[in-house]
Image (cartoon, rainbow, N blue to C red):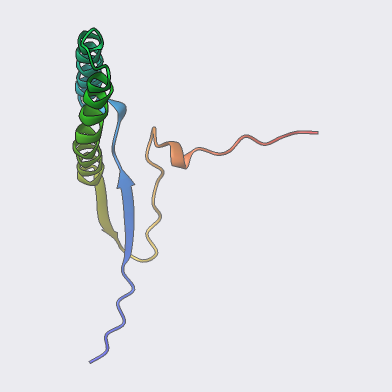
Length: 105
């Protein structure tokens, strides 16, 4: 049985800066604390430990940051079915719907 399905879909991303603002603040606090601990370890006999501390904190926190960003982005993507022939209106405030600037000569 072959049925020809001419269904159209509309993808809309509703992600705003406020959705990821908290994640950015937490990561900046993490980096600041790691740099503070590195400065505290700089006075030790082996300053290599200070660099290793910063590297370890950044290395271990990046996967969690990327996971948080990606899951937040995927949670803000909406897929809606649109009937063929239906005219879709632009979404207000959506940057992708704006017209590019035209150069005049």
